[in-house]
Length: 85
Image (tube, rainbow, N blue to C red; front, side, top):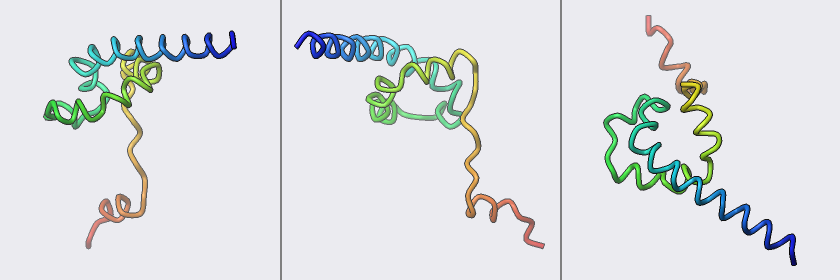
């Protein structure tokens, strides 16, 4: 029973810290990580809010280091890059 209480407290602490981080991140940080985000609406930001709260340690690391996500490599993207001539 005591272990369950500690796990629940740790989960609640993670969510609380994530909520505080999400406010700051959605106001300022999302533009640094995602190049398509500067033109985004508040509807988009509300949609990504649960994910920001859940993955806040990873997003905080990316925000602080300034790393952008790697470019996706798939057949469609590779075919679009090929010269048509």
